[in-house]
Amino acid sequence: MVTGGQGFIGVNLVSELQKRGYDAWSADILQSKDLRFLRCDVASYRQIQRIFEGKEFDYVYHAAAEYGRWNGEAHYENLWNTNAVGTKNILTAQKEYGFKLIFFGSAEVYGDYDGVMAEDVMERIPIKQMNDYALSKWVNELQILNSSKMDGTESVRVRLFNVYGPHEHYSPFRGVVPVFIYRALHGLPYTVHKGHKRTFEYVEDICRSLANIIDDFKPGEVYNLGSEKQYSIEELSDIVVKHTGADPSKITFKEEEPFTTRFKIADSSKAKADLGHKMTITLDEGIKRTVDWFKLAYRIGE
Image 1 (spheres, rainbow, N blue to C red):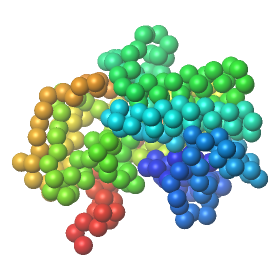
Image 2: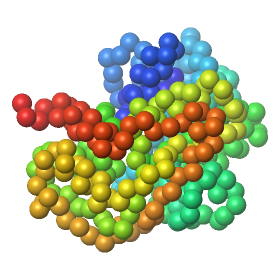
Image 3: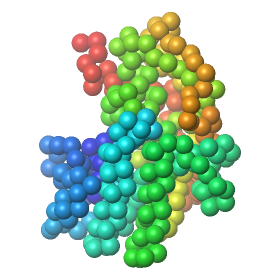
Image 4: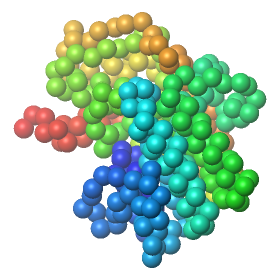
């Protein structure tokens, strides 16, 4: 089962798991016409119990969360209720029902650290998370570690970097890729903050690595799922302009954005060794595919 299965990564992951022959179900607070769908707000333990009635899940991918640093600041009640209480509820259900858990964490937990982000950095160096979203994701990891010690639950944590691709709808709180593409296709201005570099991971590549976790499940492990090549946000914007035909004069350039790290350098060597993790889709090709999806989803050009 995938909690948050109607979300961007969840939809793609359920599809990948079903392609592999798994009986993969989706659980989400949103409605769905999918036959393998269970409606549930993870912040309600009663609703979580109900979805396990009569069903036995070997693995649960826990993707349900309030996403994004600015969303977390604007809607912090929702953030903490869904992310902290919701994850505690999932862990309580794990103790009761005995499934193995794969938790969707975030590279935001690396906070103000500006070096190579290896998984053990969190154990070696005092880190200051820079926003409520990052704090909530680190709290979630601590909850999981405590549950493992106290209750013997078995979990794997993953830290995602900048995943993008089809099925990520526009919101002003989403990442730069959907925001840039949506606004570019609609002829709207957008802002590029200079001085930042990021890795970008196409969602199909990430979902392949996520699905590989259950082939050789290693309780207690934590994996970075990132890529090696870094791009400046200006370079990303140029690729978006290339594939959308947007007017460059509508782009405003500003200095670095506050409360964010300037560089995120991912060390994904452990995921490469254990999960066969690799990026097969270039940023240029991935942006092209994502632009094509946006045109269909938002009926642009009809």
